[in-house]
Image (cartoon, rainbow, N blue to C red; front, side, top):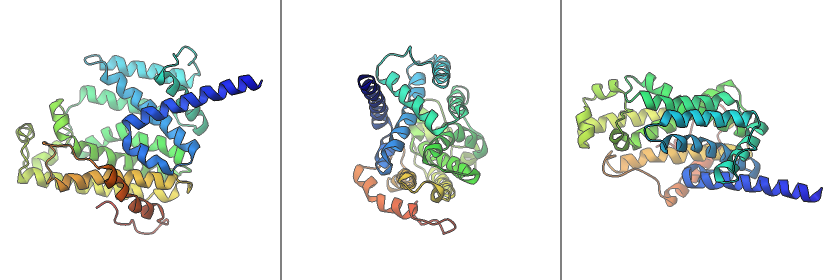
Length: 308
């Protein structure tokens, strides 16, 4: 009996370590922020992030056959929720899936959230332009807002208003990604900047193609950065309702660190064409006091100025 128990424990440990390795490689900002979480929640968060990464891999490794990758991801999702993982190999992805299965059971994470995440990938296969912010907001929800809801299941307890704020925070992070990756996305044939905003500020697709940091482009970026910061502030209102066991600090650190990319864009004079905006490890560490300040905020108190 002891031998069986030890074997089970070793297998579980290997699964959690596999999920952690995937997270460490592909979700560096979250991996940094996860330091504040208690170990059980940290492992659960790694498992969710690793599963989301499997969706990216399923799509990225099948150029021209992305829809097949999404369909396979959904089949794996069914296997997880139907407890049919015995056929999986004991490689890193297979082990991480076992950790993910344990996580969705323990934290009661709805399957529909992962289905909606897959729908966001399908949107990328059929939509390369967005007319309005409202259109883009739907996309942001599917690829990032739902991740905020997944994490809330782990970081909870939450109520309905907190759910909405978790979605808003996820949308803020995705808009930050969009502003950082204008060139990379354009090179892949996609423009996420809303067409109505580009028209308003007189920025053309030709300007993006040429990588011109014109006055008009700068004004457009300033407008979108202001929108992103507004989303961060709205989403941050729900952080005080998360568990005060490190979950609140982790979520605050993610928000403050990720919003720091906006500061990097500003620091390089909005030139997102010649280099990718990012934060160094020292810059991330410098923002930890801001995260702690945000995490200490009481419900109803003003949101501190930590997203500047």
